[in-house]
Length: 43
Image (cartoon, rainbow, N blue to C red):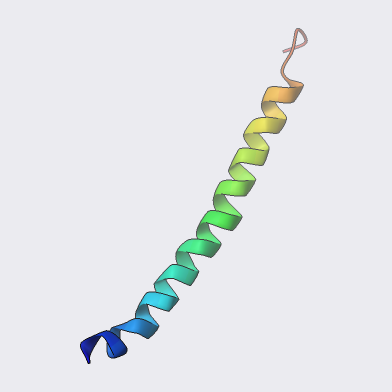
């Protein structure tokens, strides 16, 4: 029965982690890839 009370909090936590990863990590990886791709002799 305690699981039923805990379940909504798990969903909220999972959603928060999902959005943090999706927004933060993806942008960070994109920035790193862009820096790497544009790094060259001119740097």
